[in-house]
Image: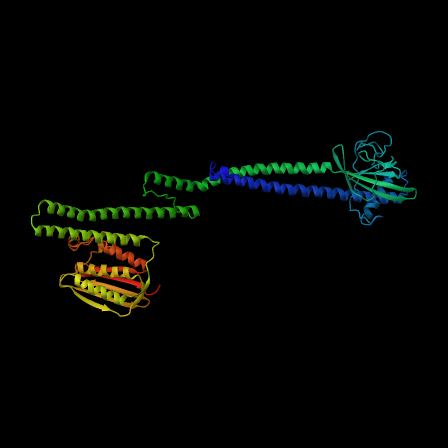
Length: 517
């Protein structure tokens, strides 16, 4: 079966396993049925044989061993007596079952004289065992052949249907014998009479009943096999229908792999079973992969564009210095431009590396107990020197705001938001910085009174390289990565960051994070 996995489809393997399992179950069930029915047939035959032998032994004992006076009327009376006495113990304590001595079945007569016990004819002549009015009695009733023998094996009454050893008498022992491919149960009973001891022998053929059982079970077994095959064919069809969505999923995945078209979807519909839910999860995953791929593609294009400008300026200034610069002042001016553009590239590369590190979901920040109040005061002192001339700072920093944080990343968040307020604030305006505790959270906010942000631009400002005012951004050397980095830092600290802004009046950026882990 292992070697067939690569060659058979799932539905074929499922159907094959179903058929094999059902075949094994059916075989086991019918084996049990055969054993049970065979045991029942043997038990019934044994019961009939024991009852018949016990009844006939009682009758032989009452006649004193004289069977010559038996006629049809006397036999009828004796059988009536036996029927009434079936619940009484026999000489050996056996209680024969009721209705075992039913009226005898008449086989076709076979003319001839008396036959011995070693006759092989199961039918026999007038004296082959059946009691017949006006004739010497013969015994055959309920499928049981009865015969009476003397001590030396002489047949006194009846006949059995096969040859046997004349001295082969075993008192009270039930034996199974086979003759001419027929199977029999045989039981002997020794009876003491006035004229001496006699042997009562009973024989019952069980081959017919066993063959009937086997034939019935075989027919039932064949019918069950046909039903299993029909069920397997139906199961093959049903499994094929059930696996059709999976086949569609496989085809879609193969088409995506061949065409690199991440916009394709499985789209099985709104089913509620596991396969439909799996397809919905795959569609969601494909959407996220497509979004990530497009974002990465856009990021690469934007980064290339941002790097291309300073590289072009550097190359241009180098050419000017080599070809056109004549004085030390011109050389110094060119070197200043090269340095400024180099610093811009270094800053861009540093920010790209930082964002790349934060993008890895399996990289956790280095959390430690950090005094956010002290850290924010240091950042504000630095930003006052870097901010444009005339900008005033309004600080409202609650002391001893301590949280578990990555001090380097939180410092970067403070720097980016404050420098953003300085960059887009009004000339000679005010930048208001606030830090406080709010329950189990720390809340930081920075407000400027500058140009503000249009409502349609607010969702976009968190995207990499997005710039609301490109002309003003270029003047300050910004790459449009600061707010994207702020968003990532907030996520890593299980915090949130958002903005409220009114166009022409200014903006407020708010960051909140839990104080503890």
